[in-house]
Structures are given as structure tokens and as C-alpha cells.
Image (tube, rainbow, N blue to C red; front, side, top):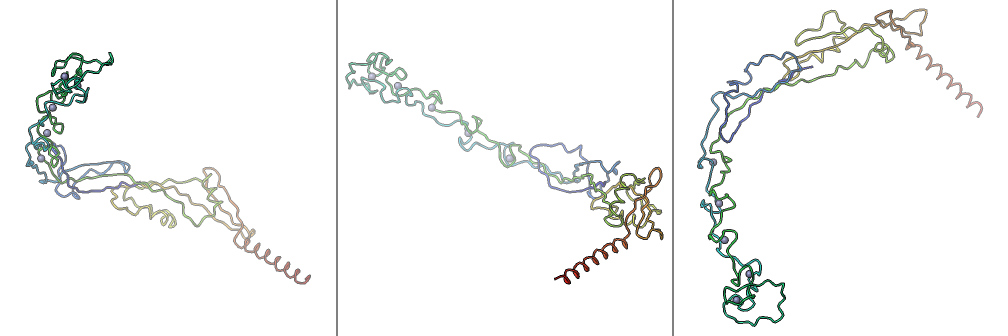
Length: 310
Ligand SMILES: [Zn+2]
Ligand SMILES: [Zn+2]
Ligand SMILES: [Zn+2]
Ligand SMILES: [Zn+2]
Ligand SMILES: [Zn+2]
């Protein structure tokens, strides 16, 4: 387990006011002292401000606002005082005068009674005019209420908009930020790939008496371990980039390999356990070679026999 630390600088921009007084200040980021981690697993993110880099700039706009381009800062837009009657669409506002005030038409005989018609304010005919505009074709504009101007929808009647460059803040704060981060990085220790046959490894895993070993930071490998173990362990103890703390945990055991002249075809592996040692018996390499030679011999005889017979 390693604690990897990174230190980076970046330019920061903030729109509006910001309080940086609670952040630590540094001159050279790589030299800023942070207490070492209590454990390599500790995580940390520290934001700092480089001394003298804070700058407050007022924007050229007026307190974050600029005049609304649609209404030119007035807040209102011109609007028609009257609008076409929505009920008759100005088409049949009066059946008698057509909205002109002159009785130019004859009233149709078969007007249906559901047609709610009223007095025409233009020509004075009863039951002839549209009930909404009373023969006038137009009604007061619903948007402006006849005022002749309406609120600008772009600026909501204020006449101003937020300035895009300063995002409406009116000022920009800039500074150089230093970030110190610490994060753990874990390596898994792998068993050596050569040296001990698989069956013996399995026996050692199952019942071996292992010795744990913990190495912190720069603690060296103890002098009494075997050179094989030292070689296997060394790659894990090489510091990684940005490493500021480390804890390494290994387990190891010593086992014996024995051959006996009475049993030339066997190899004995003796694995220490918490009670009596466990012995694993394997065929010796010479024995394996001899078995292979016998099989080959049988094959040659077989081929010879086949030749003789054919
Ligand atoms: Zn506007
Ligand atoms: Zn009329
Ligand atoms: Zn109408
Ligand atoms: Zn209007
Ligand atoms: Zn601005």
C-alpha cells in the first residue's frame, strides 16, 4: 500500500466576490509542508492560494448589467392599442354595416337564434353586431391593455440584462490555485513463478506455518531472510512516482528439499506447519526421464515389429 501525492497548479476565475482567506497560502507549491500521512491509506485534497496572485477586477459594465438590446434599455416595447377582434376576426363584425357604420347590407331573413348578436355601435342596428367588438371589428389590445406599449419579455421590464462576460457579477476574481492530493495505491504481491513445484505450493498454502513481515516506508528487508526472498520482495519496495509513504506486508516460509540415496527416484519436500512437518513426495527428474526413455524404447520396439511383420 503506497500513498501517492500529486501537486498541481491551475489558474482560477470566479465571477463575483469570493472569500479565499481561509485557504492556506504558499510560495512554492513543491516546498509547502503538509504533515505526513498517519497511514498510507489516508486520502487528502488540499486547495491553496499562491501568495500575491489574487486579483479583483471590476467589469467595464454597470454592476453586471448591460442595457437590453431588444428594448434599448427602456423596458417597454411599442404595441398596437387595438387588435383585430378575436371573436369575429374582423370579418363579420356587423351583418348590417360590415363595420363601416353605413347600412350597406340587408339583414338575412333566417338568422338562427343561437347567433348571439348585439347592438352595433357603428350603425345602431339591433341584433346585428358581434357581441365582442359590437361592430367595431377591433377591440382593445389584450397585450398592452390599450396603453400602446407592453413590457419587454427579454428583460422582464427591467431594461437591463446580465452581462455575459462577467456573468452578471460585475467583477471577476482570479488567482493561482495549488492542489495537493493524496490517494492510496495498492499492489498485490504475487508468488514467485519458479522454484517450488505446484503440489508443494498447495501443501504450503494449506498447512504451512508462515511468518508475517511488515515493512513501513524505508525499513529495509531484514538481514536474515534468504536471498531468493529478498529478490522476490525488492521490486515492491522500489518507490513509485509521487510516493510519500508505504506499508508492505509479506508472508514467507522456509521449506526443505531432500533426496535420499536409498530412494533415488524420489524427492522429498518438507513443509513446516504449526505441529509436525508435512512431507510431500514427488518423482525425481531422473526418474521422470527414465520413464520417458522406457516409453520411447517400447515405441521403437513396436515400430520395428510393425516393419518386420509388413
Ligand atoms: Zn428589454
Ligand atoms: Zn353595424
Ligand atoms: Zn367582433
Ligand atoms: Zn397592444
Ligand atoms: Zn460585466
